[in-house]
Length: 193
Image (cartoon, rainbow, N blue to C red; front, side, top):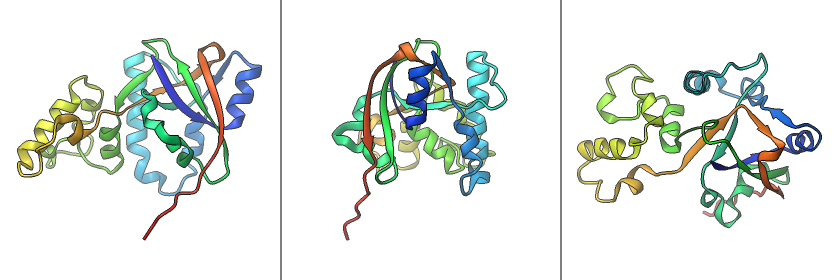
């Protein structure tokens, strides 16, 4: 499975001197503002990886985050994912097929906004239908639910209603998995009024 991830120079330096680099990203998460609001969805991803991949995380180990299509980074948009002038690398990584855990990116965004994935489950506790984000038919199920609740707004196809971008998480990168690396600097986001 080919994936694309943005990493800081420290990860690249480690990849050039070590065979394997483990993610420590989750340590930085708890230092972010509003961490308490995001703790549950992130823990859900960690728990899902542990269960589905039968993997035990080390004490300080985190997950690398990637996308399964380069089209997500078309036109240099990846430069907007880093702070202005920050040095970063866009890596193309060939993961073993059973190593990465893929899920629907738009479903993940709904989880971060503390909702359930289907409008039909609005009355259920938060997280009730989150496992749907891993299902192969998640796009079709979410689009059908949207059409049921918004018949006047649902004239587009499933992919346009829900989106098909997938994120992939994995706990470490081996140097031989890296197919390409591109150095770049972050770009300012310009807002026109």
